[in-house]
Image 1 (cartoon, one colour):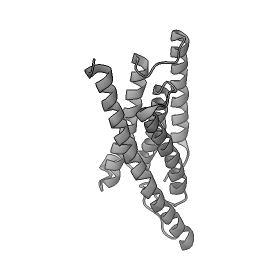
Image 2 (cartoon, one colour):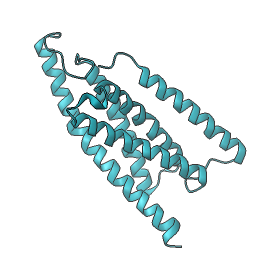
Image 3 (cartoon, rainbow, N blue to C red):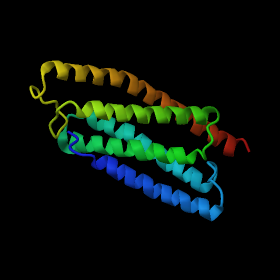
Image 4 (cartoon, rainbow, N blue to C red):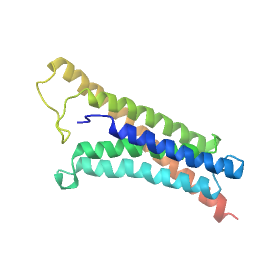
Length: 184
């Protein structure tokens, strides 16, 4: 179970540090870093890698029955941390331009982060052990049933949006590689 907000505080701290670095680059270059320049590309790539880690590693651990890979609560904290920091870096990568496919990908990113925040709130309403297993009998059965239904509904929204986000992101990356390097 998520017993505190450590992952949120760490994500916030990292976002502040990344913002500071971004500010230094803005002061140094006297311009907002372009998405196609070295800093813009670097922050976008690193953010996207964090987003991939958010999805792939947490999903693999969730489907693994072995506790040898760590507690589910730690993996959920990792999922939340990378799910906030990665998209923030991708947002900075945009150079504050939201056109075309890149704009649609950014919109999906914002939606998935908001959905994740809602999901975290619902998840914390269901009492769980350190391994993430639901604890029966601590809430009234009706409240527990309602929370499970909300979590199920949330999954039916969050997962397809995540898939659309990654399909859009891969299309954006493919187009960026083609038009920036291969077509020249």
